[in-house]
Amino acid sequence: AKLAFKTIKRNDIRKNKLIAKHKNDVDYFIRFNYKDDITKDNVTRKLLSFGVFKLENRKE
Image (cartoon, rainbow, N blue to C red; front, side):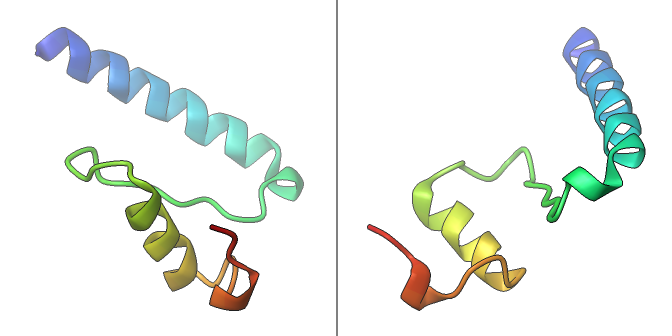
């Protein structure tokens, strides 16, 4: 578990540096809690809450 945590932490640091270097390429940056399931409904709910798209643009 400690090794997995260190790996995640290292990846997060690398990801944050990449985003900082390429701010113009990133319109939205949304983090998901590692405890949350990555399902279509959860992702859609998160994107809607950040205003990434509206319901009328949503495709099933």
